Image 1 (cartoon, protein in one colour):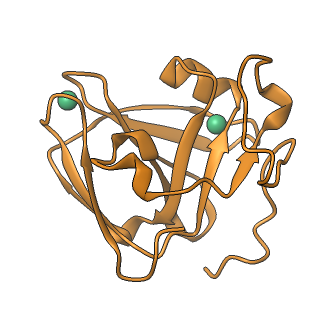
Image 2 (cartoon, rainbow, N blue to C red):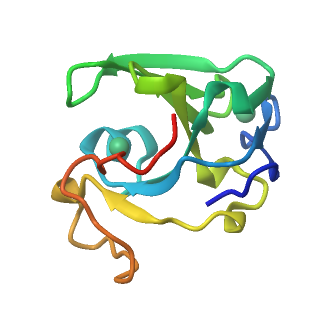
Length: 145
Ligand SMILES: [Zn+2]
Ligand SMILES: [Zn+2]
């Protein structure tokens, strides 16, 4: 959880793109889906869900759009120079986006609250046993829109 009014700065590896995120977050999750594995080259990605209006950007990310598992379009925003992943947007309710927690200047400032798409997780990836895990998306019933 990123608290109300908390400001977090981040950017890509080379520094060409910088951003500022303002809390509150909607969720912080580890996503194990196949697309995240391919897009990041890792077992899972850690994402901070916020509304688009909570992110200010300096610089113009490159994008790649494909179809997500539920059929909607998913656009991944990244630095065209260094390839650093920044955030994901798409046909998502409430104009929310998912910022890659690893691109924060201090990734330790967020704490994952759930694991999603566990059905795609690889055997060598391990997760906090104390947080809830979902085979696909996490139900969003407790999130204000
Ligand atoms: Zn860069
Ligand atoms: Zn994913």
